[in-house]
Amino acid sequence: MVGLSLGEKHFIKGGIAQDLRTDGRKRSTYRPIFVEVGVIPQANGSARVKMGATEVIAGVKAELGRPSPSHPDKGKVSIFVDCSPTAEPNFQGKGGDDLAIELSVALQRCLLGGKSGAGAGIDLSSLSIVEGKVCWDLYIDGLVVSSDGNLLDALGAAIKAALSNTGIPKVQVALGVSSDEQPEVDISDEEFLQFDTSRFPVIVTLTKVGSHYIVDATSEEESQMSSAISVSVNRQGHICGVTKRGGAGLDPSVMLDMLYFAKTVSEQLIDKLDSEIAAAEAREEDES
Image 1 (tube, rainbow, N blue to C red):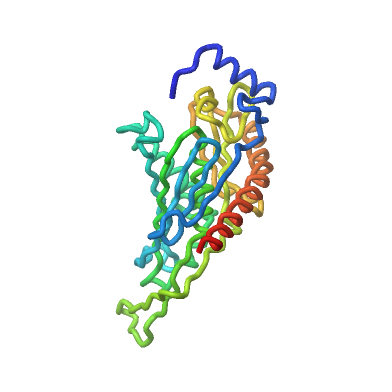
Image 2 (image 1 turned 135 degrees about the vertical axis):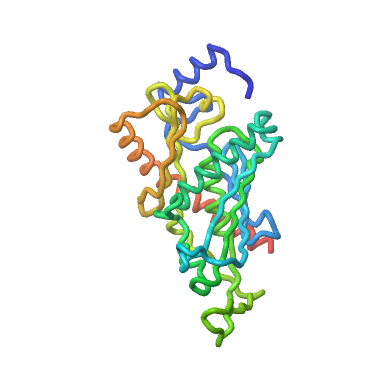
């Protein structure tokens, strides 16, 4: 990103302090959101999300696998992010790789409940086919196409939209297989199960600039941040995950205030995103 002059930095910080950002938004206002689904034909589900000049794509691929011994009654979900070198000069080489890993870990923590799986936005037991033997493995790939800040929230929105667009083939299991044998399964080409994403969270990142915090920060605003926390919240108001970046610490009372603010803001984001997903699905049906 082009470096900012001292005057530009003061202008950004001063505007945020007065609740009037450089693009005319208030501190709690998102940029326009656009959603398109079914953008990757070979995937089980996919979506493109644009938040202002930030554009990301998410794809979901389902493959048969074997459950982990520690969770024999659940399937598995993995999230990987790639940052296109054309999205941002800093993404070329190691910079893009490091950011991709950071985003993948943050998405795993916010959307899938981290290593424990607690608070996961996906019911992993719904991916089980035969306990201890066969399950669905979901591979979720995110791609940053264009970057102008707030990548984590945009990727979270794209994953939610892609899962709404995902169809998992119905599976018939062969009967009469002994307990120590791997069962044979027949995958349907015509019948599919849709994901219930009603409890799937959105990610709200609050970026602290000066003594105030804002949502949906642009790249210029992020360059002036002291810290940021990302909170995943579902429609039921449950906080599913929290992650922080930036070196500055946060007072516990400020942290509680930020969590409350994130829950409030998440309601408008969920309503807007669900509306955009429904419109995108309607467009896809009309085109097919």
